[in-house]
Length: 362
Ligand code: GDD
Ligand code: MN
Image (cartoon, rainbow, N blue to C red; front, side, top):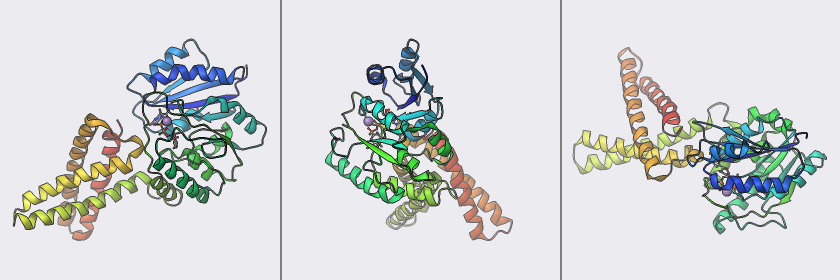
């Protein structure tokens, strides 16, 4: 049978949801030519193995097992580029998205009625029991109002993680998508050359079946980042800009702690400077985890402790390099101000490069 539709299912620790989901996909898709591609980021609970186990007997099922990578958006993009099917859908693997919508969505795009079909939690007939709190629901609605401004497209659920479009549309713009965070639909709508015609489908956003959510919902932040990416991201990469911003806040923290201690301890400069350095590093680690790497956040006491330790080590080496290079340049006659700036830039690039690989790279 001809392959029509690929359903891309990013997964991170969803083992127990896989088998029931495959059953539901069969039920919803029947005789259509389809495949489901699970894109797993090396889940520790054995999600990828579970998919392989099923795939040995079910040729509809495939797995992309990514090692040393993280991120919902990049997983979705990679999955969508890995199929020969003319239509691709992205869907959550935790049963919050009902596979029953897939065929009507496919029909609307195949017939040309829409360029992209989006399952919405906010049109009439939809429901949001799966949004765990009122606050989260409010955030979502607010985000959508902003999204309309950003993409010029009128849709009620720009943060939806459930949509379907022709594979060529996606491939044509895959190089322009950022792959950061989880606002991938917004990204697709925003980077299309011609505005895409959207058709929305009412989704009953269910409770997740088992396991826990991996995303947090600082949606306001996501939009600031989205705006930045759109207009400035090609000059200075978004993550580096965030990392640098956090770094400069860290300098503020450092100076505040230093001043307080230096005054209180009268003259114990080395002690004050050490405590300030340590506090600033800890502050930077926390804020980077919260902001710069929020899509691959370290969680749980073990991850946080090892992450914090490797961050401190990275930054200390960075600081040595910074001071070393700056003093060398200054000795060679470079104006002290310029020497300091070059040292700082070098230290930051070092810190960024190493921590993105070894602290948050897993
Ligand atoms: N490969 C991969 N890598 N998959 C991931 C990652 C990751 O880093 N993070 C999450 N996932 C998978 C989960 O396993 C799940 O199948 C799906 O992506 C959605 O993740 P959840 O953790 O369940 O997200 P949520 O339910 O809080 O968020 C949903 O609603 C948001 C809007 O409120 C998702 O549909 C989002 O896409 C949506 O923006
Ligand atoms: Mn979910």
